[in-house]
Amino acid sequence: MSTEPVRALKRDRVGHEKEMTTEAALYRDGTLVANVFTDCDNDFHGLRGRVLIVALDGAGFAVGVSEVMRCTTRGGTLDIFTPSSGRETFIQKFPDDVAARVVSLDIYQAHDDNLGAVRNRAIGMARDVVAVAAIIL
Image (tube, rainbow, N blue to C red; front, side):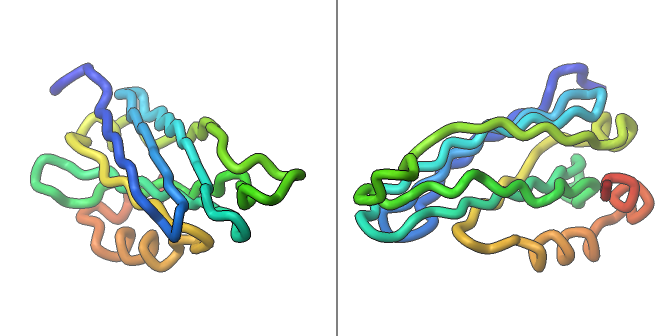
């Protein structure tokens, strides 16, 4: 069993001139830290970024699912009252016995979508339902 944190990085274009980059680390004590950068270069329409992280074991089974992280709304470039880019950090807690089994993280990013359907599907397919249910805060 490794003592190193599990790390993942994902950059996505989530809409016309809208980009998100998430760096995630799951520490072996169960602490999940997600650093998310959102950037909206669209002149008129803002970005409402959402992030969901699924923790996978060595067999590729989902053993943990984060809560949906709702990023601060970013304004279009012509919106002088709302910043069009920014960075924020989210911290969530997984059970440490689940964190010990995780070998990789899948990051899902979207604009203006609560990712609830993805989260529910991941929970439904999870190999260890008890462990996943314990994550839901």
